[in-house]
Length: 265
Image (cartoon, rainbow, N blue to C red; front, side, top):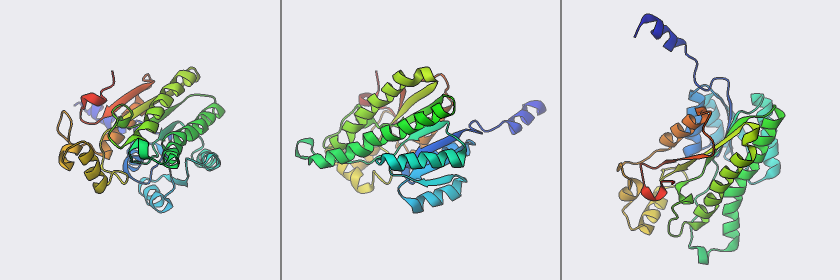
């Protein structure tokens, strides 16, 4: 490397410097890793979650803003996005990540349990995406929405319907936003994450899901073509790359080490 090239490398700005990012479900797991990754890339990050204590710790760590928000509550979402506009001065990227991993045999599931899962795993995405589009329009148009969808959207697991069914609907939601709002300069994409150890997928849940698939926990977590376990940080890296791919739209990237049943085609 020449001295000139070395100097340029040292002075190169972080890839997302000046970009304003909101991450839902940011207090733990994938959301926390995403907030860290975007802050590390130079973005100003607003971290949204209902867990205020964990949010405060994260905001202090990354130099971001903590905003309590229940994404299932339209009024709470409107208040949160008003705070984002005030604190960040606007919004460029939304990472819609908040969710819960509900289980149960679908024919035996109480209807209220399925509705509760849809409230968070589908309508929660719709609530924050509507708010993001309003923010983009108020700024003159253009922006990016990235969904955490899950590979359950295309590869249903036994007794995992309460989670997978709304996630399949969220996959369709992502495509609809791209179709309806691409002409406004709003770019939309999604990530289908595989089996990730998080606050949602606990050790006990891994044991249960492995049993449902007839596997040991180790086989379940590394049951892919590479034979490796995927981490929340791996998923965050994909979100970060998607945020920078200005001509990629209506796309889904699967991050699970390679499982043919989840390979979109």
